[in-house]
Amino acid sequence: MAGPGVDERAFNELRQIRAENQGLTLQAFKQVLREQSFSLLLDRDAALDGIAKMLPADADERKALLAIVHRIAEAAGPPSGERAQRLAQIDEIFSGDPAPQLPEEAPRQIAASAPAAAPAAKSRVKAR
Image (tube, rainbow, N blue to C red; front, side, top):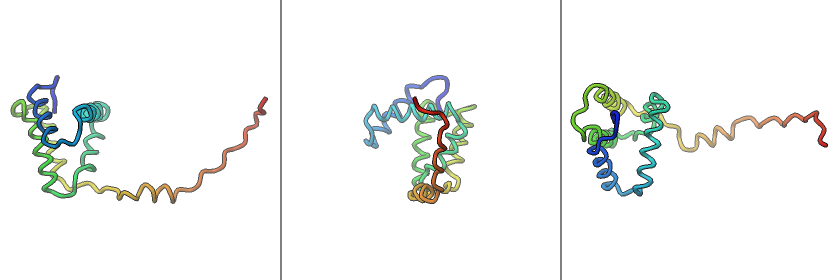
């Protein structure tokens, strides 16, 4: 939700949220924020589509997470213009039906059912 730069109030809100959850070191937390920021810069639409797949199925959990997003987005004051539009888009993602998620074992089942690779063709070049 950041504009041209990071507002100190939003940063302080992020620090407070990190302290409340105590799950990551400050360095790891900063790394996660950088990665998320780069994901949005590289392919905004794909990053936003990915959010729906990561959200919990429980509506109350999604609501609690959305409240955290609002704490950060509104830390520097009420969003307006493009920031308000982006926040509305996030609201829609969080309030919609959760995207279907692949069961954990699905990738292994897909890999197991894939046809075996064909043997490599023999090279006609003679080794010296």
